[in-house]
Image (cartoon, rainbow, N blue to C red; front, side, top):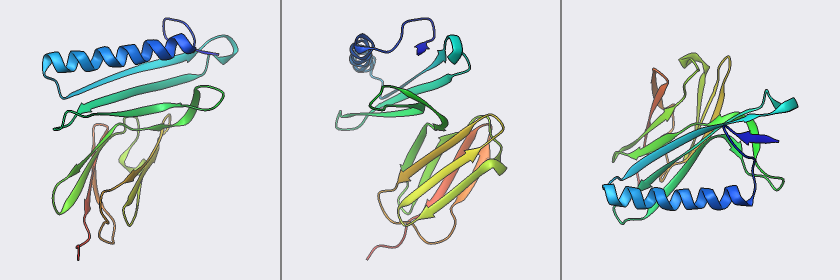
Length: 170
């Protein structure tokens, strides 16, 4: 069974502790006037699963109406049997609506620009990357249709920036 770095395994106590930590984080954000906080962590297997390594994290943003949104990232997913460590990671990203286009910023450390592929169909952008030691994949639903044609991208120091032009409305 995989265990948290420095501590116990997965169980109901871990779930309640995690919910309590999230509530405390939201209180801290409100008290300090923060609108965004990120946390990351790592899980390592023990014994015969010692090569198992999971990365997880979340990003909490509080919008204008005071509603928090929580985005998760990493390579740990829920299943009926419990947490599962997948080979493919989900990158942390931001989608910015800039009027006539979308700007998507994604963290993809450990890959080269040549490892990255983009696929755009209507209002769905898929980002995938496979480097020597890391794989990433994320499907993003945009709030409106995109213009036909490839999006533009730039990649520097592990940060991917993609620009997608919106299709004309009407």
